[in-house]
Image 1: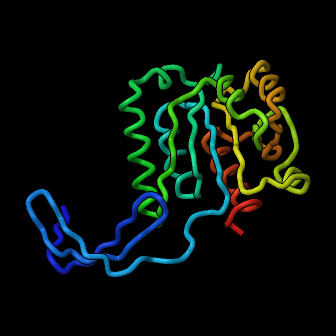
Image 2: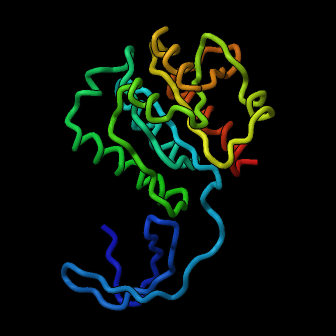
Amino acid sequence: MLRLGEGAQVFVFDGEGDEYECEVARVAKHQVELRILRQLGGAVESPLRLTLAQALVKGDKFDWVVQKSTELGVTRIVPLITEYCDVRRAEERAEQRMQRWRRISLEALKQCGRRKLVEISEPAPFEDFCESAAGSDCLIFSERGGRTLREVSAEASYAGRITLCVASEGGWSERELQKAEASGFIAVHLGSRILRTETAAIVAVTLAQHLFGDLR
């Protein structure tokens, strides 16, 4: 374990967008007092408010999606309970599940130099999510076709906010696709190759940041 003594320099952020260079002024048994030296400037957060609505998946794949999408600048992650998702994972104890995902996201946040915490919502049934997101700028990725992200970007202005919906390994059911269409979601695809769900999530986030955010 790293032990910091008086005079050591550290960097701290408040999770709301501000970061400071500080100096350790005093060390007690259960408390450390810092002296702020300066507030750091420079934009490190994407101007795009990007929500990833990802269906729950098996094993540690969802953990990996949380980590990598945090590095890529997502604002919010919504775990989705879909007809073909990993129901066992969806039924895990909520407190343990949320603590793990938030810990993974926080570590990724510190590693990549971000300053705003990623909001991770409680898992939501896909139909409930559709109702709450109806009328907003939502793209649903489907192996059954749709437009490309570039085509969509040329036709619409997303005013700095977009939501990406990615299915589990089993894809979307016909009923879910109909619900998404009725909610105004736009069907898109990622090309002719079939990607694993965790790959599709990261590719979708990367392309969205390239087209609408700061990965240019």
